[in-house]
Image 1 (cartoon, rainbow, N blue to C red):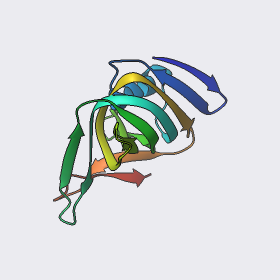
Image 2 (image 1 turned 120 degrees about the horizontal axis):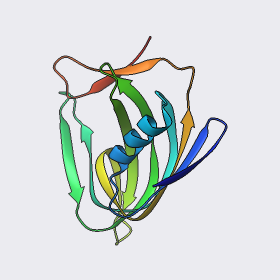
Image 3 (image 1 turned 90 degrees about the horizontal axis):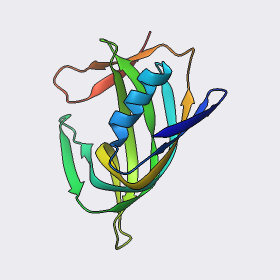
Image 4 (image 1 turned 45 degrees about the vertical axis):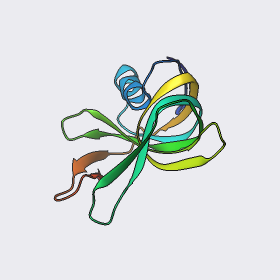
Length: 142
């Protein structure tokens, strides 16, 4: 991973074998920020797990084992109540037949490269807390 900053913007390149969530969480710890909007991401991934939450607040997952294009990536980063960095990401992936797959991104390993933009939110006070009877970890503002 390499990154550069310009004011409140961070542009990061992830390399083969790096997992997107873990890498962005590590970046938050390295740079010392607590909140960010993840505004864009492109690249090529593998072992991509995406899905959706149903009306009963349960996640359903689909895996693309092989390579896929990371067409869009967006979301945010906040801290859990214990201080751990937490990323909430949604993505559009395209398989090698150019069929789109979209939803909540649970995990994805960079296959070739991922180029991601984050906008730091240094004055935002927000955290992630689990919801009762739900797999969702809600965003709250203090």
